Image (cartoon, rainbow, N blue to C red; front, side, top):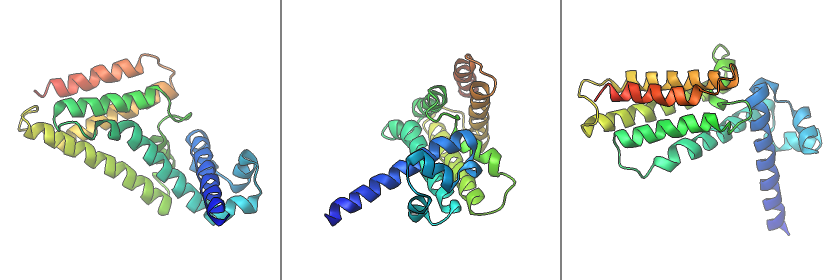
Length: 200
């Protein structure tokens, strides 16, 4: 019986976090409230807050869950590929695909959180910042690997290319979510191939 109760509590916690992520992708992390989640999950406010303690912890757990989804969708499918330009292009393709499929109803969760918290000090801002920096380092490492493999010129600056790739992805998210541009994913893929192809 205790084992089942622990499993049920874990499942309930995961369900609350999943709903919080979906809501926050549309309404922002600040839009998350214990009362709203209680209604969405048909729980009492006390039952919801018992899983997190406070709103900030709820926000942080939603962010961690969103990061895990992003990693699963974009990085994990390519983790075993040989480092080099083909893997870098595959990562970029999957990033655009993640945006195109609208894995989150509000678009890229990290992009939305970045805009929401870029001027707000605190633990949530620092966690969002670390998410962005971690992904930027991943891109820089893959650009460096492509350069080391001879797929990109020796003069290639990994930080610059990672910045440019991120800029294309941000514009793609805006094109899809704000502008309703159906061509945005195709434009993004062409821009990425133009960016990386010119460097060969």
